[in-house]
Image (cartoon, rainbow, N blue to C red; front, side):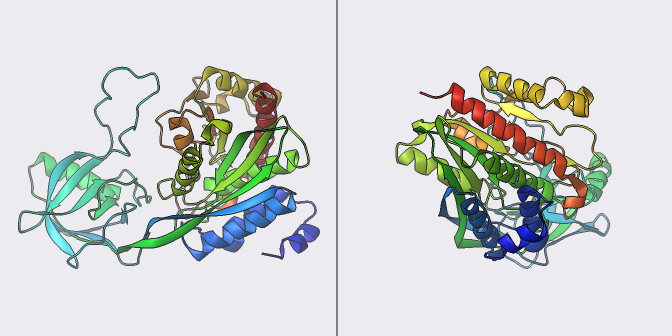
Length: 416
Ligand SMILES: [Zn+2]
């Protein structure tokens, strides 16, 4: 993309990060992994990093892709007729018959992944899964023809990690509420399900990496994913993290730190972390993972407008990094600016190891010390309402400054 410098000239009062946020969310829009829009975002961001004087690489990430198509539905036909809003899980198979029909049978509780809820300090067996109720659809030949997970929202948000390659959908609260009533009476529930989706064996995304060479080739990684779900402009998740990363890169560009810094814009995070998974695996295969001193991840770091809590959420892999986060919060007077009641209580950091929340997870699993900067519980996250109007870019800019400061501190403290 070559028009960015014109934009910069006409918008001199707007920060680079803010301009990048607007281009991603408003000019490009939804950036689902493997689509031309995601590729346009990658090229645009590569240009931005080059413009900051960084050494930029754009690495293709090939994976077995998946995308939803128009026309999925769930219709209840017994004990009464009801159309339920649904979202196919990622990697849900399309229904083979068109549609499938059968009776719901309890199938336990849906879990996000095998490590869900497992803390680094945990001892003993993991707790029983506490996810939403899941039902198999038993077809008229007594075979499982699909799955329905009962969600807690009127309009469910697309979600789910790789589970089974069966047709599986998340259903709206209407079904959850009825099933609570019907189930108590022992009433059989008959449904018809159609899932329109396809696998894309030729899918490709890109990791865009800008390197700031330091005195040592040992490096720090500052990461943020630039893709979004297929139906949302993805401002908070994760235009806000990209904005913060760009502002941090701008603050550090031209410096020579004791460690090398890699600004990593990962693709396909929303599709089971394909971008960062590929990056960590390839570092490991080349024997370069030991060169990574620490990773700082920015995902969903703008305060959702109207949401008074939970926007300073940090998680770390060790106490030293937790101490650094505390110092950063003090350095940027977060308590005075926002009030401690705005900060998660208990103190806003806990261990991230085994948590599958964002691109830090494969680094943490491989033993790389990691800091996760990001908010949970965004009211608009993963919905079409995740727009710039519904977030606070000021908080995103602050997170960019904090990230630059933490990277600088880490470079000094972890230098060989
Ligand atoms: Zn995200």
